[in-house]
Length: 88
Image (tube, rainbow, N blue to C red; front, side, top):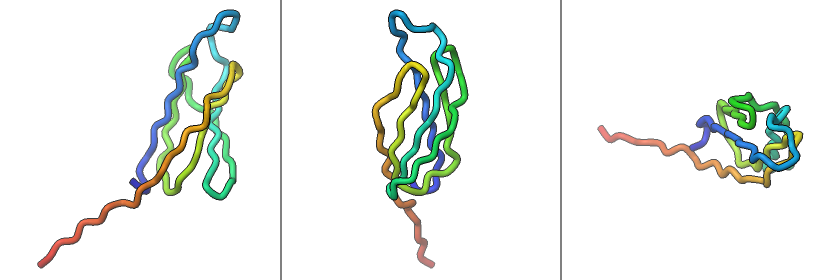
């Protein structure tokens, strides 16, 4: 729901002729209005990375870019937070 955190993890597949360790991974986010923001992901292993976006308030698309290649684009659709009403 709107305002919730989002965890993004990436595991880079090993390919013949490539280094065993991936040097870096960058999260590239594109908002609905077309603006782009990039940020480094935290390393969790030789070929794995993670980031947590504290609060997601709008739809976006993202991909993970590394020195060994890029992922495809993924879509995040933000749903309005449900409110509960109580009657007295």
